[in-house]
Amino acid sequence: FFFFAMVEAWMMSTDDSDQRLPHKRVPNEPVSLETLKALGVEYWNVNGEEDPKLQEIREQHGYSYSDTINVSPDTLPGYEEKIKMFFAEHLHDDDEIRFCLDGSGYFDVRSATDKDWIRIHVQANDMISLPAGIYHRFTLDSNNFIKAMRLFVGEPVWKAHDRPADARDARKSYVTRFIEK
Image 1 (cartoon, one colour):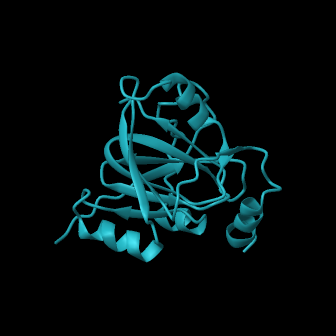
Image 2 (cartoon, helix red, strand yellow; image 1 turned 30 degrees about the vertical axis):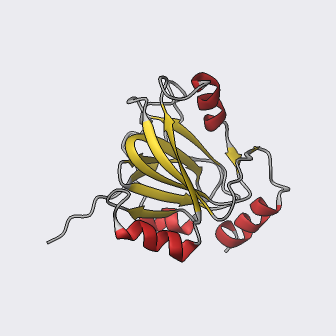
Image 3 (tube, helix red, strand yellow; image 1 turned 180 degrees about the vertical axis):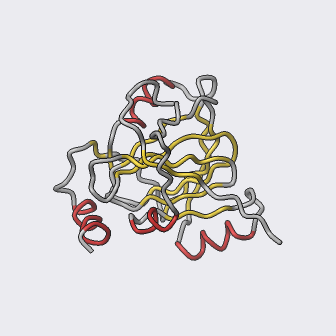
């Protein structure tokens, strides 16, 4: 008998108080891994940096570059500005791959209707990949700390494109692959 931890995701309420709170609807509306996969979001449970599964995923997806970021008021210079920037709705021209090594936080992605937010709570050993062109944002939870490995195919590209960015090729491709299918 094996127990595999699963990332938790849910439809967000429209409450716009402290972004670090869970913001679950009442009653809660859980979102399955299948629903996330249909949006292009991939999830793996990886047991730390030494887990052979990490190397397998890196090789399978071509994640050749990685670094580690510590996000907390004590460790990230310009913390308040960065947290606001991470929480602004945006997309990237490349996939965003994050492996949570310690701490926790929330990735919010737009639902298939593009009207609602789905909140994904990542904790230690959760690894997710957000596809290029998906509108998303990130915030810490009330623990105010995450240590995450950032992975890239080739050289890292840090450019975020705030919404609206519908004219970008990455967005057009995303909509064709995952929304209009």
